[in-house]
Image (cartoon, rainbow, N blue to C red; front, side, top):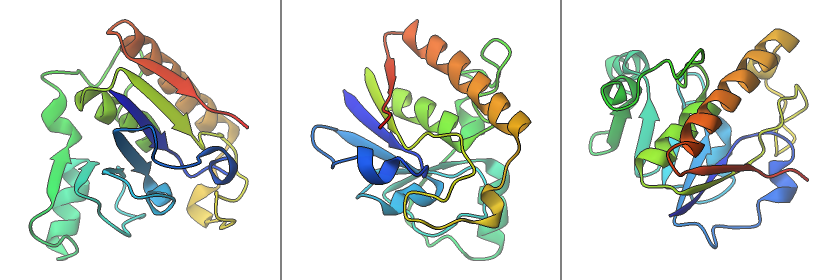
Length: 170
């Protein structure tokens, strides 16, 4: 199955042309607004904005949002922790649960992806795909390096299982 992961980086505005030919599309954090997504991957409660048919997040986030009544009933909610028996949190020195963009790769793999095109994964403090610059997006060099390392480890782990990750750049 060919899938796409939409990250909110600035290149998303020009690189992602539409749902075709993807069978499943995941939106990471605010990128869920760029296209009609099948899955929303947001590990933190802060970007809570819209929920497609499925939401992939942490048990802590689900607990906090349920406690405030912010999750309507009837949505397909998956906590990353329930996946640990199948895919351990640590995949050889990196946790796939540390960043929403990396968790989105695992989410697509669990849905049967053999190919994942990743758009908007820019690792920059520049404004998002829609020109919005959120305070929460201001991250330092160490943070971006850590995420890049996790992305690399998870991509290698997926490749060993027949799932190819393609980072689409402008």
